Image 1: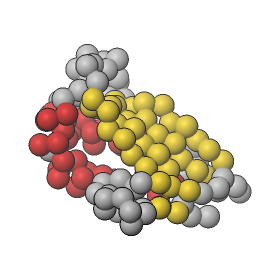
Image 2 (image 1 turned 180 degrees about the vertical axis):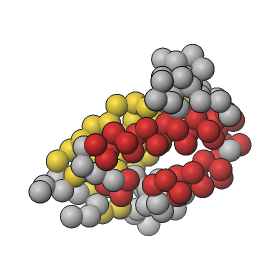
Image 3 (image 1 turned 180 degrees about the horizontal axis):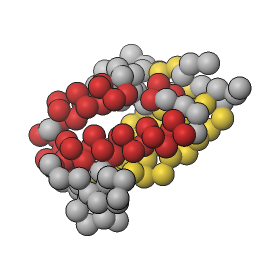
Length: 133
């Protein structure tokens, strides 16, 4: 099973996301992950470093559920400083491609005042479709 990414020609060309994703299988909901290390401390280095750690954390949970990044169907990114995030969009995109590949899930970026960990700049939450065994 593979996911089908659907990008209708009537919509603007997506960059860093898919407009829609369809597939079948077991749905796995992935809890929000911030850029915390194994000891629960937010990693230093700004939004790119935190995005990398948060994505790595999300992928660890997904792999534990039997999937990989290619099975991500949906991703929500909660962003504390949207201007800072957008200023680093190319670097964040490079992190995505290195850790998750060139396919993107249906994605939303949402600006928030703060996250659970006061030092956290981003949080990633998602859903994946894992093929039946």
